[in-house]
Image 1 (tube, rainbow, N blue to C red):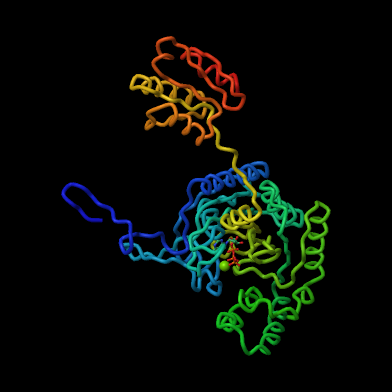
Image 2: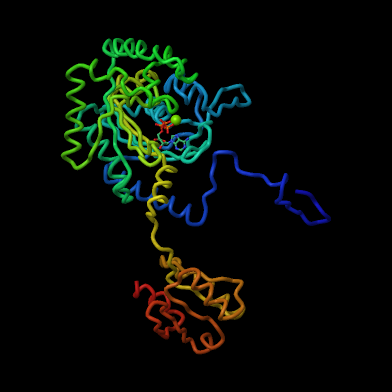
Length: 431
Ligand code: ATP
Ligand code: MG
């Protein structure tokens, strides 16, 4: 940008053009409209499932994620957007939504008995320094649901059925598989981890991430995006699990099936975050092999972050990945954009009356518009068509003098004469 006399000239070419940060998106026109329609549908589902919203800051102390998500996770080890504020405090743009929710629950003492079980959701941007590619952004949006104070098979089933309900609401029926697993813990996990390490030591060509994970958090190796597919004959977690553990997984599987929700048990499903303790699950897009919904239970996190011992579980939906599927499957979620009325003003006085009519109609909840730039009828009709107007009225010398306004119904083609003060009432009557 530079100044030339009194005019500011914007140069939008070459070196001068400022672009959005890598891995981010601008949404406008149909895309922002579809986005809002999806969010509206999600909120509708959350309402009938009786979840209330929690709104937390977009940035948090770095320590929250180091302690909450774990430093062997990809998120903490290499994906956080970190900054130091003017007083030297270390913050990060939130890289996930569960730890902030837990922090807020502890800080605001939402865990008191009369609040439990506490069912809440968040929705908003998440930031991760990842390699951008299809379905993988640096700023993306998650809708997350979390429940505190319940730990049962019925609840696990209800949680997964909530995930399914989000997809049903959007009419996404194809190309999705739901995988579930039940993570083992305590001594059983230790024995399993030792066996897994032994098994992995026969691989000499593992990626560098896997090599560190073997020692830091060996379960995570199974979740590796690069090598994960190589481990088909790895020791199976369920062989090391207690009978109770395996029964729980089987019962969850059967109950979901009886509710019409087909799942697959995947013993290698471990999830990328360190806080999961029991049930883990993913809704996967089989076409891209990417998870669109992922979650599970994390019964130790509240206590680890300084709160009481409180079982918890939840999941997050990647909204961009949902939008990708909708586009791919040609599903339109938003309603057709239609105007109840388009007004064509043909003089200065007509423009004044148009503003009066616009205000009255909009207060009555009618969707109405005009185009102040149009100078003649032809341009007016063109604008009306572009805006998908159901009715058109011309405000010109004749109609003003006679107080007779011809309202043209664009669908039937019929015209009805109405007095200026009755236009809103007439249109309300037609709805
Ligand atoms: P992935 O295995 O694809 O990296 P993840 O295990 O990191 O996902 P979670 O941290 O559990 O994912 O986040 C939940 C959901 O958020 C994912 O299932 C996905 O839909 C979405 N998601 C995660 N990372 C991204 C990203 N970089 N861009 C867009 N969506 C994402
Ligand atoms: Mg990831």
